[in-house]
Image (cartoon, rainbow, N blue to C red; front, top):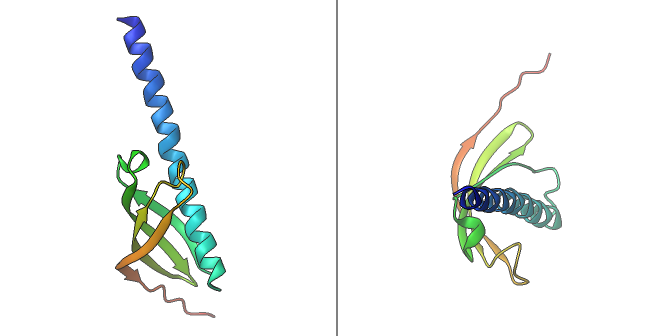
Length: 106
């Protein structure tokens, strides 16, 4: 029983590492695509994806980006696997939300 529990804990820790690293790789890839299109002042704040995204070859992700106080949540479709595949395609799908930050300078 103890060996089974140890194995489950080991597998869970491994999957947690892959899940975290998947987000880092996707965030870096989206930021590189924004920079290559001349949008280097747009920053990627948050990447959200499903629990099974790191083990599938296609996933839907939501990315929160910020530009000068305005914030938008964008949907992207990832085809291929950012960790294990050479061919990865990240395509814009839809705009989920747009929040405009209005600041009044003094």
